[in-house]
Length: 555
Image 1 (tube, rainbow, N blue to C red):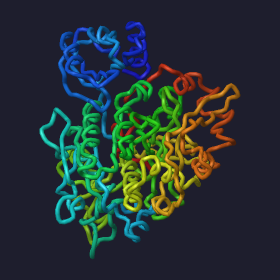
Image 2 (cartoon, rainbow, N blue to C red):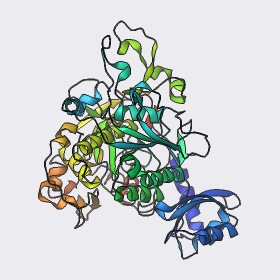
Image 3 (cartoon, one colour):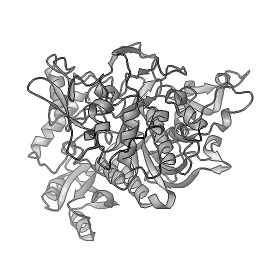
Image 4 (cartoon, rainbow, N blue to C red):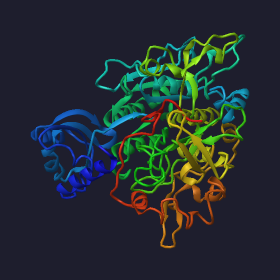
C-alpha cells in the first residue's frame, strides 16, 4: 500500500469514528470485529476499577503503564469507541510498532581529547533501551561485565540477551573500551565515547529489531524506578516510529517526559527518513517519535568521511529533518557521526548473519590481517548510531559535573556544538546511485555538530529553566520564526537563540527561513504536510535502510 493510500485510509476511517478526539487516527483504521492491542491513558492513575471496565467490554489487561497514567490492553475494535466515551479516559492509541533506528567518529566529536584528560564516563550509568546487550563482548567488560542490570520487556522473547545485534553495537559506540582493537599489532582502535560507563540493559526489541510502544514505555518506567539503585543518569533510545499525533497525546512521548522530569537525560534518534519525499516535503517533517518531544535531545546523523578532521564532515542525506508534524517543534537538536560506524558486535546475530558484507575485515584494523571478517566488529549507519555519540558525551559531562540537570546538559551540548557548515552538500546512495542534496538549515543540523571537549570546557552557569526545543511558526509574511515560552533557558543572555543555533540558521531575530521555504509556494501538498494538523506519513524507508538502522550508509 502506498503512503498516500495509507493516509487516505486513516483519514477516511477517522471520519467514520466521528472524529473522536480521544481516539488516535490510526486506531480508527483497525477492524471492528477483531482484537487490537491498545494503550489507554487515563486522567489519573488507573486502578483495578479502570481495568474492570475494560474487561467488561471484553478486553484483557496486558501491562500496567503507571508512568503515563495508563495501561495496555487487547480489546475488540468495536469496543474502542464505547471506551472512549468514559470521562476518565484521556486518549487511546494503538500499541504501535517501534524499530531499531569508531576509529574516526571519536576524534570527530573531540572525545579523544576528553579521554586524555581523564573523562571516560566513570560513575555514570546509561540505560540502553534496545535489542539487548551481549554483555560478554570484551569491549563491554572491565574484568567483569559493565552491564550491572538486565531485564526483558519484549513478550515474544524469553530473555534479555541481544539476538538482533543493534543494542550491542549502540553500547559499543557509547562505551566500548576497545579491548579487542588495542595494543601492538592494531592499526585502528574502536573506542567508545565514554569507555568506563556502566550499562543497564532493558531489552524491548526482538531478533528482528521490532517491539511496541508498551514495551518501550514499560522499560522507561523501570529505568525511573531503579534510577537511584544503579545511578542511571541517561536513557539511550536508538529507536522510533512515525509520528501519528501531537506529542502531548502520544504515550511514548509522555513516557520520555516523565523520565526527563525524574532527572534522567533522554537521548533519542531523529529517524532515517530524510530522503522521504513521498509527501512533497523534500524529507522535511520526518522526525520520528519520541524524538518529536521538545524535552528530549534528538540526534541527527553526520558522515565523518573516514578522516580524523572535522572540517570535511557532511550530513547524511537519510537523517530525518524537522519541524515535527502536528506541533512544529524545531528538531533535531544536535547532529553527530552516524554513517558507517564501526562498533562492537559479535557474529551469529541477525544483523551479522543477514549482512555479512558489513563485517569489518581483519585487515582493516590488524597488521598483516586477512580479508576474513572480524568476529568482534561490525559497521552500521543511521541516526541510531549517532544517538549514543551524544549519550556518551552527556556521560562525560555528568562525570565532571554530577549535579547537572537534564536541561543543563542539553543546553551545554547545544550551545557548544560546532555551527560552521557548508550551505549544502551532495550524497550518493552506494546501492542505487541516487543523488541527494542536503541543505544545512535549522531543521537539518539543529544547533550544530556535537563537540564533547567544548561542552566539557563550557563554564556557563546555566539557569534552572527548562531547555525545551523551541516551536516554530509560519507567518502571513512567509517567514518561519522560532517561538519560546517564558520559562525556557534560551531566553537567558548567554543561551539566546542566535548563540545556541548560530547566525547561519537564523536570518534575523529568531527568523529561520524567509520567502524561500523549501516546502512553500512550490508544493501545496508539502506545505500541508508540515504545517497542517491532520496529516500522517507511512513507514517505508529509503533504499539501503531498514527502519532506523541504515545497513549500507552512503558515500
